[in-house]
Image (cartoon, rainbow, N blue to C red; front, side, top):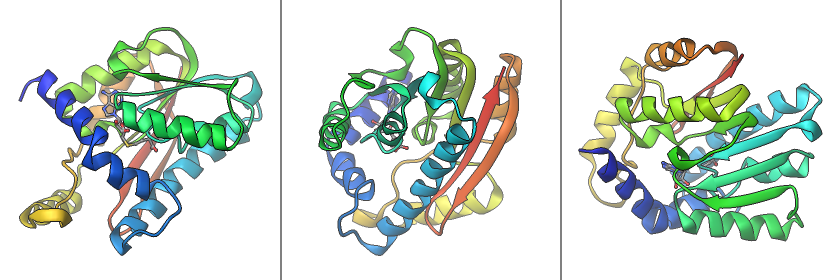
Length: 226
Ligand code: SAH
């Protein structure tokens, strides 16, 4: 499958069925048990990033880029805490929803939005964050994306991905046996050592790391600095 196909599939998914599914998961209304479990796991990821950034005590001085911002689950609290945030996503539906949520809490100036493939982003930011996006791309594509995000980041990069371990590889295989609505979202697992090799070659060092994990959600979070 070529690069264009991957991005087209992902964009179309997050503008249609994926939008309905993830807007609900990343919300606070009623959802089924699996979706609730994923909501809780994802919130752990968001809360860890917020805790890291808050603990440095300099959020109001920071210019951040949230690449693949979804419905703004991270961007909105970051902007509310005083950071200047540029949030973008390849799906216009996700960005529209993020804009609605931002305006509901009265955020406008410190938070700006764009509908963009993250590989077309330009500019420089103190910190670039990209959460739960790489899971949608195979390793070679994920590597290109990481290299592009690295060019945008001055001093810090925060990334999450689904780690490729024996247990998760099996879980994913089991998920793929079930057709229909319960079918898992198309997902790629990545080896942590592969991701780290790319980053270290680009001059980054690992600063903090975390693992968010519930029954149906798992995401490895890395903070790189230089
Ligand atoms: N980072 C958000 C959303 C995660 S869902 C959060 O953690 O809450 C994954 C998001 O990545 C979707 O909104 C999807 O549209 C977006 N995405 C996928 N591929 C992308 C790409 N190439 N460029 C920008 N956004 C992308």
